[in-house]
Amino acid sequence: MSAAIADQLPDAAGEAHHAGDVVLDIKDLTVAFPTEEGVVRAVSNLSYQARLGRTLAIVGESGSGKSVSSMAVLGLHNMKRTRITGSIKLDGEELVGAPQSTFQRIRSQQVAMVFQDPQSSLHPFYKIGDQIAEAYRTHHKVAKSVARARAVEMLDRVGIPNPQRRAKQYPHEFSGGMRQRAMIALGLVNNPKLLIADEPTTALDVTVQAQILDLINDLRKEFGSGVILITHDLAVVAETADDIVVMYAGRAVEKGAAKEVLAQPSHPYTYGLLQSLPSPTEEQSELKAIQGAPPSLLALPPGCSFHPRCTFKELVGERCWTEVPEWRDAPGLTNRVIRCHLEDPVGVLHADEEAHHHG
Ligand code: SF4
Image (cartoon, rainbow, N blue to C red; front, side):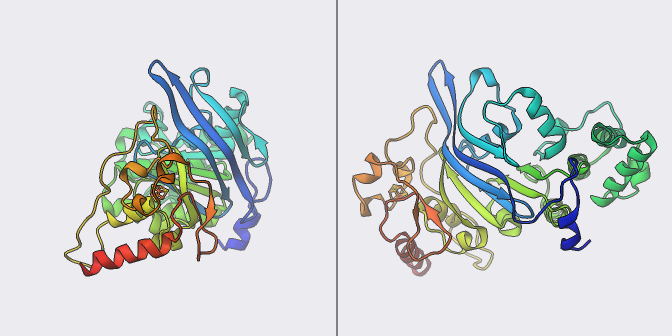
């Protein structure tokens, strides 16, 4: 199907998808959990936009808060124990403070979810085809036979061989990769505007990983939905993402076009993540893991949260541990914003890489 036709495809609410439109607009989102030991600041002042027909990667180590905003979009936090402020607009509708009924509608109709563990979305006691057909019938007044045919069509579309026969099987009869495909089919049956994939390939072997990423990519083009890809794996980002948000200790620290950020990082943390990746071109590449560990979200370091691990802080001095960096344009780069006090981050990081390379 051509992209132009995909742009015209109606969603479950009968509206056309227009590539490039903002589908999710998160502004100044803060999510905190009061606990006995103190307040856990899972996400602080987070802002980003996801657009139809594009893939936005949210990247960070575990505990960086990379999954927290999508949980908030889906209403999956325990509302009594969570403090959420700021704004989350899905297709223009404000979700902060919305009732559970709104989130139920969103989860069944507007947003599809793909998690690391497909078991969490597929019911073990119902046949795969029946689950997809039922999800379809929730929003389409059609006969069971029509919904079943649609389920088989979706299984076929996500690359499951013998979809007629497979539709009659239970989740335990599927391999891990096939279950992941079935979950994607279930998620996309109502043509949602947003697909949230949270570490969708982490549990799979490398070949199946690549197939699932290709599939998500193809479906994004065909259905015209926006995709949010949450991952710790920069290799996955390089394969699939258009835009990237790098998170550290509950804050976004760098945002820009994915390929450009990976080619030329301008925040010391992004740089550190990239340095710790094995290089495909150098056989003897020396892996440099970032020293230390992420901080506790109960007691964030003052100033820039990354300062205890940052090897460039001496170039700035005191401000790094006293002042939280505000967003600013990365000098010399277009469409790139960072939270870092370095005067010439690109130059400094480039010089470090050169020294590392030749040293
Ligand atoms: Fe490092 Fe300072 Fe930049 Fe933080 S603000 S990343 S500590 S140089």
